[in-house]
Image 1: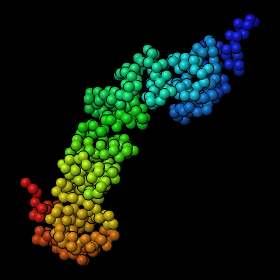
Image 2: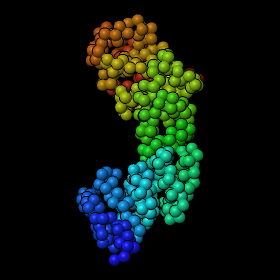
Image 3: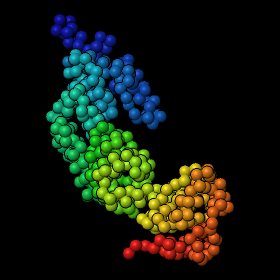
Image 4: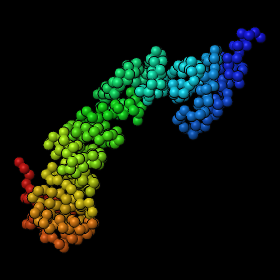
Length: 423
């Protein structure tokens, strides 16, 4: 055999001297680690597991692939599933030796069909701000098959997205594309649209797009997104971003619409603190008086629903949330509804409500609130230690009313008499 022939044969890895040039079967092409990968894959498929990660088995596989030279390089890309192409990209741009890169680059771009193109694009978006992945951007931008598949899948040219990301305008670009989807299909909410255009959920890019969007969107967009998704996005934000979100929601949503977002109030109340405190003034400093009142109404809604659930009493008192302030007696869980001229104590369970003149409340009832630690104890103290009448008429400002019969009508009459609505 000639020296030239010997040189050509030796370009294959030493442990695989007789590898054919175009072998369809992975196990014929690669041995050892590759065969183990194939076996592991069969087990995962049997268990219906499809997740892949760059572990030591894949590293061993890619090192073997990187050792191929010459004609043995052809066909390596066909040995990989689409998800494994993404792992190859990760290995190539973060761990591969220089001597492996030409071979692995060829394998990466070979047989780049739809699934593989999308998985590689996902890698680009997941790691768009990492220096090691910029080479992957450059490689894919020139691949016509890749560009065609991404445009078909997501409706835009990938080089437009990559250029936007490179110039720091990635969030604006993807929000613009998501906006087109939500405008053409009112059933699509923003985050669904964001995922449909290829932005990986939970990624840094996803968070940047979401942040930019929810700080400026309008009432209709907030309603389509919903409280759960908004809370998921904003819960880990810093104080300033939460403050900006609160200010925009108060500006864009009315009191009725805000009720949909009551699950977010615990987060905002922790941020704002009690009215009159330095924390409250700091957070609400840029909020108009009208929107401060709206926030107070929102907190009233939260307190009522948290105490009574979504039942008759909640629906009844919701009609008055813009005419009173609501606070909670923490030890007993009772609500105190302050109508300025009188105050009401409402219990979470089936205990009668107590109504008192505001002055009497401060002089006498406050003593019971200071010493009672349960609703049973507070009810007993109010029953025995305070002045009240129990009757269907409205002849006394100090009144106890059970939630039975015409209680709604009777309480409305009381409120109309002692706290008439402003005209």
